[in-house]
View (tube, rainbow, N blue to C red):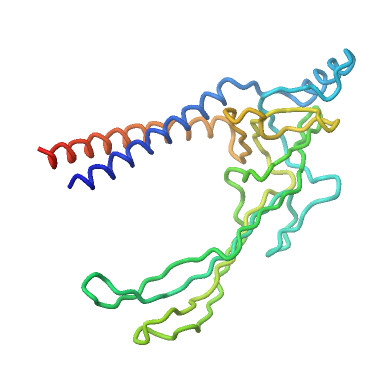
Length: 250
């Protein structure tokens, strides 16, 4: 019983940590200003006029429409859809046999990820006042559009229950994209290290980097709700686990 109690305590602590992270994310969105691109460009020019080139830094929010890289839009590998960002996965579904603690044989299914690939090319945001580059830095956007999911059955590699082997059930191909024109909310650090303004991951690891198809209000509501869920659930599990440990030791 005490082992179960320790597991519950560990899960409860993990819930508390998750609640703390959601709280930090929520407060970061509240604290950050949403600025038009033209205003950011004006601040950059002011620093340049004073002789400071490449030294502009500003953590803020920018909202605009996704715009392709100067080299042109990307094509999603599986569907061929025009986009500024994509992610594709290939998952192998397998049926395999296993023996339980009584020595009886059973079958179960498992998924092996064969491919999980994300585009690395930057893109831009356009608002009514200007354009700014976006450096995704490997960060996946929140709530991209799922445009493709296909399961291709495929047998072989074991053939059935009684020979107690593995059997390939097939492959699932899935794809998500951000299309040109998709409205995005971005919270990050604006800088001019390469010349033009770019918003990307802040240098400080304590500052979040968020790229989302949802609005700021939707993100704040979701963060507040999940914070409460993790805090209450984590506290409840930790208390229950502590009770089980005490009961087991008494």
